[in-house]
Image 1: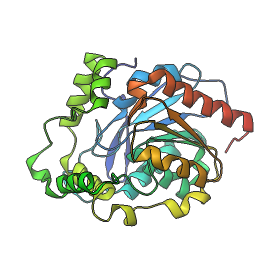
Image 2: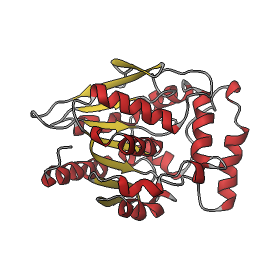
Image 3: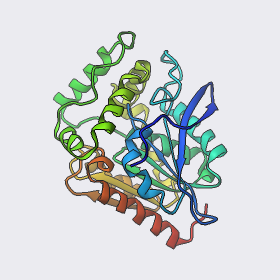
Image 4: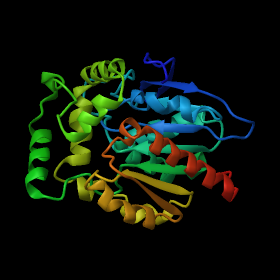
Length: 290
């Protein structure tokens, strides 16, 4: 597993410093693989799998603004999905070393879709992991009201909630299948996150207008690079949307990981790594370079 330490580099963009790190290298011309975490996560989310992916290529991870070791602004302004996409595009332009293979998890999936739509020249291929182009909200009204009620009531001036562990079945699996050192580091990162990012980005993804205001569904046919959608079998509602997500991009494939929930890289690491490697082999076989 990659070392559980602060990222070694920083990149200044749009008034913030993004923490990032890289591992591995590959033959000349091998595109960099960039991994983009989700809401309230960090680059640490990929620490258990980075070394396996970096055996024959350069792999880059970063903390998005407000997360992990990156700048916490302490106010709501600037915490939008569009701003995260702009940050990432500038980062890739400077650090990517050519068109990259770009993976986005959950909120990170929405961010990377924004990047490829605005700057397709930066991206050779996409992996959309446990994400949505249109709605992260649960379909049943009771759960939806519960989620939106939390976001609406959350006051960032009071700091972060106590723990990211909600006690669900995936939390049990993560506890069983990740080292205690990693779990402690995750909890520290969560506690250190900017609560204003939690509020603003949570409202964008899960608030009352989230489905309509942030939807990229109409733009999916414009994503023409090879795209693999990877999703956990038990990650509802995202697994329910996944066939449409894969079908509505121009060149999409779908991989469902049996038994997995929202973070299969943590609970089903070998199956998830194999799915990413299969994606990269598929892209290489097509001869796509940009």
